[in-house]
Image (cartoon, rainbow over all chains, first blue to last red; front, top):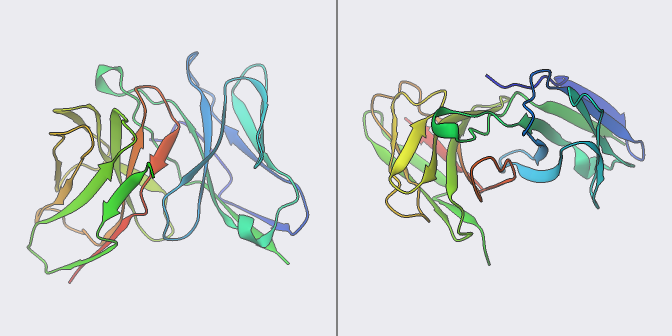
Length: 113
Length: 113
């Protein structure tokens, strides 16, 4: 089972900022938090990854509070092309200490004109 | 170009036949993963491998088999024992154990009739 909880869906309008929050109450000390974007009939695409505080790249920002039990993906000024499913992942160690990369249901973001 | 390649993009098979999906990467990644995605659902982990000649079952391994004879290749066989094999199959790779930044192929859509 995924170790994260996200809203099932969100709606926004073009030009607005969108914040998607993910809960990961049982995050381990060594775990990073990683976000992916998936368009229909395509493989997920890595967006951003962070460990604590704030990370920013050309696509998004990731905010992580001090307790690291949640994180927020921020998409500035969304466009119609940002309509996609967004997944939040943390580490999930399987047998032998290997990371299993477990995806949850994700958040379906719909951007409207 | 470096990347991860899945083939074919579309595959049709008759019920009762085994079918093998190809996944090749030239990223020199140690870890490789197979996922299944059903319409409107998230990704479910089938098998994963962290090194050559070693692989682990994911959450839904029944009816599937894999091999990892070469670092670059991680083929998935959907056997006749898989009760509902029609789905979108995604392969991914990441550089090492514990790295949750993964790269995905474009997927294979398998239809069993």
